[in-house]
Image 1 (cartoon, helix red, strand yellow):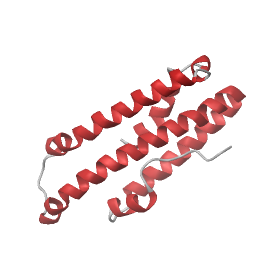
Image 2 (cartoon, one colour):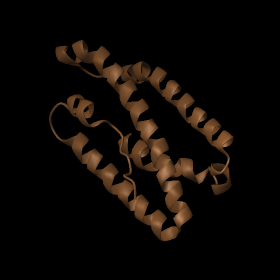
Image 3 (cartoon, rainbow, N blue to C red):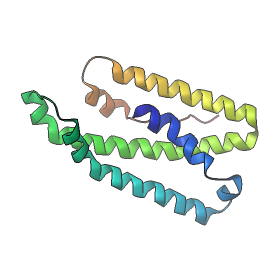
Length: 141
């Protein structure tokens, strides 16, 4: 999910918004609202997806279930907000040409891979996410 949200989604979003679309603030605001509506749909799916995963859970897992679900909703919202920021950065790079665009995409790939590596480390993932956040954000060029 991390790779999809942090790496694929900004590219997919950018691929359906043209340079001309970005010049229309009303249209871009509407696209942003569409993006945020999906956040709400995803948040409503957290509990159902948690049930679908199923499996044996420890007593601690059961105690932490409400916090885990709340955290999942927060991290999804946070990551998708960062997606929109990354779309804007990738759009600026797209306007600067293919080389700039490829360079920014390579930066996004490195940031996403680093986040995956961090999530795979042993230990309390939710605590690390609480400290560092879920998504990644391209720094200014």
